[in-house]
Length: 248
Image 1 (cartoon, rainbow, N blue to C red):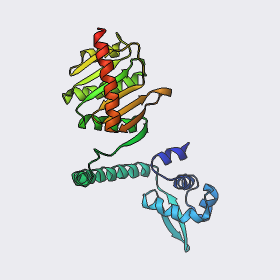
Image 2: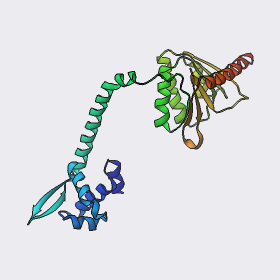
Image 3: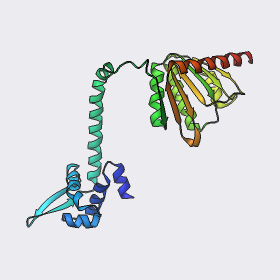
Image 4: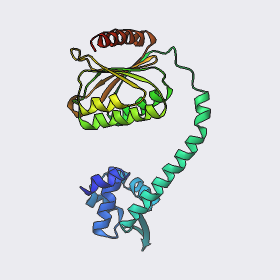
C-alpha cells in the first residue's frame, strides 16, 4: 500500500522500496538496503543518488564506510511542494512561448484525420478547443438518459458557448426531461426532436465531426477532421432538422 502511494507521489518503484526500507531499519549500508528492499544490487547506488537529490535521504561515513539514513517522512511533503513549484514555473515558461509555437504551426485546414479519444481528460480540452474556434454548431442524437456526469459536462460546455454568444441547433431523441428543458430555456439555442431516430450523438463544428459514445460509464469520442465528411453529416442533420420542424 505504501509503495503505491509513494509511486503516485512521483517516486519510482525502486525509490519507494529503498526509502521505506531505510525508514524501517534506520542507518544502513548499501548491502543491507539491497537485502531489505529486495531490489537489484546493480540499481542500488543509482536509486540512492536519486533519493538524495530529492532530499529524502542523507549519507554519513563511519570508519570509512558510507551509511544511508532516511530523512523524516515530512521530507516527502517538502519534495511534493518543490515538485509542484517546479511544474508551475515550467508552465509559466511554456505559456510565454505559446504564441511563438502557434506561429510556427502550419494551418491544418486541408489536413484530414481521424482520432479516437477516451475519457474526460482527453475529450474535454478537445471539445472546448473546438468550441473556442468554431462558428457553426449542430448536434444530433442528443438524449437525456446518460449518466448525470455526462449531462453536467455538456451543460457546462454549452454554458461556455452561451458566454461566447455562439448559436447551436440541437436535435433531441427525447423530450420533456430535465435535460431537455435546460436546453429549451438556454439562450442562443434552438431545440427540436426526432423521437423516432436515435443515432450516436454527433456534433458538427465547422469542418470537424465528433461522434460520442457513453458506453460502460466512459466517454469516448471519434474526432473526424474532414470537410467532405462534415458536409455529409451536416446535410443529413439539415434534412432531419427540416423534418422535425414539419412535425411540430
